[in-house]
Image 1 (cartoon, rainbow, N blue to C red):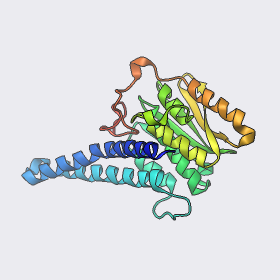
Image 2: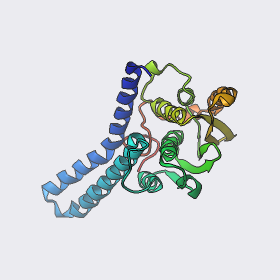
Image 3: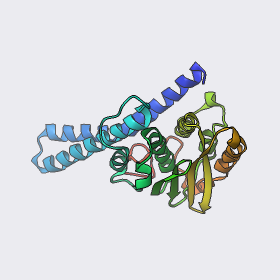
Image 4: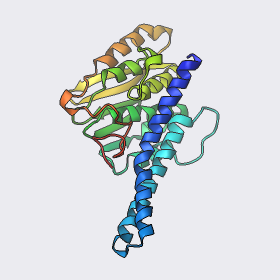
Length: 250
């Protein structure tokens, strides 16, 4: 990538990360203000609000630290990825099943898997479920729920088929996930399964699989988008907070 494109991706990912944290941090501030007023009737509720919101913010920070910050060979400390994913999706409308086969993948592949979870969660405007397994070529994610589907611009970004310089906040997560897959020598394939279910899977990206990789982009683009009546506003975030998704609240 050129320096301009790298900066654009960095800016958009940072903006989305901050958007994810605004909700729980704002709730912490609200709880602290209530406590400062010294109203005994609201003290217990305010304490619960601060505790729960701080926990959600911390869980998301830990998850994004791995999903965005882990570099192969750089070492990693903290809970394993499946626990980070569990904490990030706790008390949301998206259920996340991180199966044993995916837990056995090398950490760089689990980083790709965690970013797939973010893409999948964004494709569930009404909530639903994510089921992550390991397939022969890498991680495979099944996404199911009401109106489940990738937006066309997100499908194009995952296939790295759109102009990177024109990225916006909505498809940048898909684009970053596509870049991770390419760095690991694979490509991402979208596979329609049913009217409200599809899969995102790693496919070979070597020379022998170039033709398959081209088909991967076509398949990703063929994953049906959500019905128009169910689409969240353009500024909805990556995942599951009341401050970032509109349709999925914690």
